[in-house]
Each structure stands twice: as C-alpha cells, then as structure tokens.
Image (cartoon, rainbow over all chains, first blue to last red; front, side, top):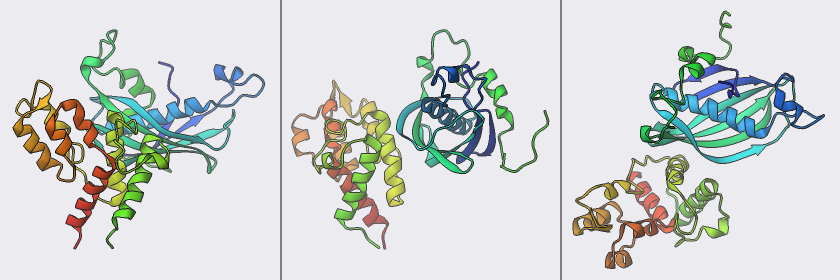
Length: 167
Length: 132
C-alpha cells in the first residue's frame, strides 16, 4: 500500500476537523521527473493528500464502516511551490455536518505558516454493490494497511502539541 | 435583520457560482440547476451545505430537492407522477410553479422544476418562517 500522501495526523476532532502533515523528500522517486532538475511536490498529490485527510475525517464519523470516496473537487487553488525538505500541514474542516448522503470539506495547506493551497472537496459513500470485484474485504478504502499505517486507531482526541508518541 | 429578495438572490447566486463553477451571468432566475447550470447529484448536496452556511438555516434531507418522492410506488407509476404524487410534490414545493409540469408530470421533467428562482423562494420561506 504505497499511495499514502500524508505521513501522520497531528490533530483530530471527530466529525469536525482533522490536521495531517506530510514531509516532502528527495527520496520520493517521482520528484526526479517532476520536474527534471527542479523537484516540486505535484499539486495533484496535494489534492490527493487533502482527499485522504478529509476522507479519514468523514470515514471516522461512521466508524470506518462505509467506503468513503472522493466525489467532487470543487476548488483547488495553489499559491506557493512545495519543495524537498518542506513539511506541509493539511487541515480539513467539515462544512456543516457529515451526513449519510455525503460531506463537504474545506481544506487549507500551509508550510511554515504560509498558505500553499486552498482545496474544497466533496465525499460520498459508495454502495457496497459498486465495490471493485477483486476486493475481498467489505471495506476497500479503509483496509487494515491504511488504518495501521496512519495509526488511525489512535485518532480520537488527538491534539496538536500533545506529547509525541513513542516509536 | 431581514434580507430582501434581491439580497437573498445575490447570496444564492454566489453559492451556485462556487458549487457549480458557472459564471455569475449564467445564474438567471429561470435557469434550471440541472439542465442549464449542469448540476449533477453530488452538486445538489453541495448546494444544500452552502445555503445552510450562507443563511444560517437547516435544510433537512429532501426538503429543498424532494428526491424521496421518486422512490415510492405510491407517487410514481411508469415514469410519471400519480395524482397522489403530484399532490405530494405540490405540498413539498409550494415555492415552485407546477402549472406546465402538471400537464405531463414525468419523473424526468421534475429536475426542470429546480430553478434559481425556486431556491430563492425556498430560502425566503425559511427565513420568513424563522424570523420574529
């Protein structure tokens, strides 16, 4: 499972707000092609990172029992480049409330306090009958790997500035 | 402080421009949300959330866009609304003009009832009802 574009959650308020961080490193292979000689973290992967941050926020509201999928990218505006060595902070806020029909997320990405991107997304719950045929699990979005990698079992009440967890 | 119909229209227009990515001048009173402004199913929910935030109102599921009428045998037969279905639709959408639709009430044409004006009327009703 390598398509994870956030590294960890640093704040989590169930049903309302989640903050994750992602470290950009020259060890990421795609940076050598994006762009040759001038590595820049792709805006598309920042959208994906925000979708993952928001997706976990929306998923947790239903205890990760539903397959939450990105339904719409309403808006994505980018203000600054992100380069290797940067740590970006992805903050997702729920607009209104999370409903069985779906949810709307207002996202902001910053780096060292400066605005990098503003991203608005909408999520919906996928009907089980529309899950990929190859998937044997009931939930192909929140599978065990994803949950474990992002330490999603320990999100509840996570606040910024709390003591770092042990390795 | 009560909002005038013009003020409501302006805020509804902003919400539709943001949700649907259309130009301001496309959002005219009789523009259909689906047919003219290109809204798809997820967009209807986006519109609901934005209206709730802009006007500080609550819009329960099916209140603005009565999708649940379409799923009942009582209200729909062979792609058309039954008399009961038509009555239900009238009750649920008092702010919509159903005179043309009534002549041939097909399910397909229900979406045409969702116009900018209909939304403005709905918000006006909600604000008028909640105000003192």
